[in-house]
Length: 424
Image (cartoon, rainbow, N blue to C red; front, side, top):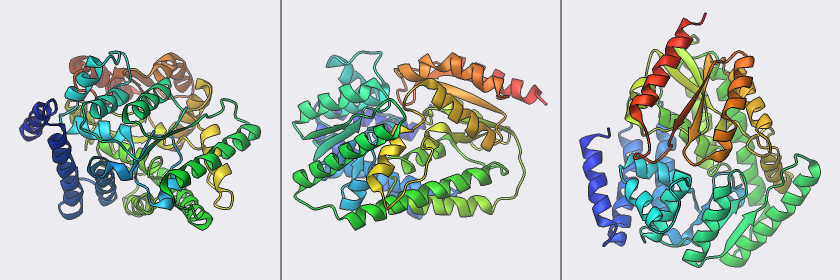
């Protein structure tokens, strides 16, 4: 369970939502602002300094979403945000907000608010929390909404509903299924149209040099992250589940920002300084992480027995961007993304990552409401195990604390670790 202080804060915030949504918004804004301050001035000693830096940077983006939302763009996790960073427009990531709300023990009130307004119980919890956050009045309207069709059906439904509810401009990138250069060219034209959309609705001009610089930062960030993975293959790192989610943010909504580049630079330098060698079993985590779930945190966080060495969501783009061709680079990142198209592509990429990181096994996490991940679970398990990586298919929820079975999940994870420890 969360600490008594966090539980008390969550209960207090939840009581405020029905009658005082603006007060709730102000309190959440203050809380996430303080997280940013804490990570800068009083970082936890067990956590790598690079992680603390990124935690502070993400906390500030969450605070921006609740402070001056009218300056922000609400985006989904796969949207290329380099044009936003080039224009100085903050990108608000719903998946990030949902993660922060469950860490504040204030997720259930928004899940219930969404379900009371007709959102199905089986809907993705990340999107359900966002809908509840908006329609309860706690999150105010952003400047506009931008999203892709990648990688789940909820993207199409959630963002269209929010655009109608908030009455704000909305732009969707329709990502072609086929991994071809014709698809890249077609999507690149959509990205140029998205730039026109941004200029029209801000009254500002996007400088091509600024866009190329943002894409250059994306290239440096992804190069650094690949270097980090190579270093991580031969080193053990005492870490926590939250760390992998921070890397997901750095390689997605914050990709192209100075903060993401600085994070991966520090991550490489601090990992390189660690001694080579390994301690416990090494797990590759596939899909989102229930970083808030204390029953799993007790097993996985800062443990000499087991460590999570990577997550496939941070390793989804097969090519490095080319700053001289920014639109084609952003388009190629989506078209050839391991989360686009058939499950075979994603599983092949997972096997590649498991080999790179010298993993002992993998956890395929079936987040509640994600049909794509759940539907591919047995196929993924078969192919990962055929490649030499024992795999646990684990059902759970990445951000809804009321939708988990702690006992069953702990029992299965413990049994899986005993299996890995029995392997030579």
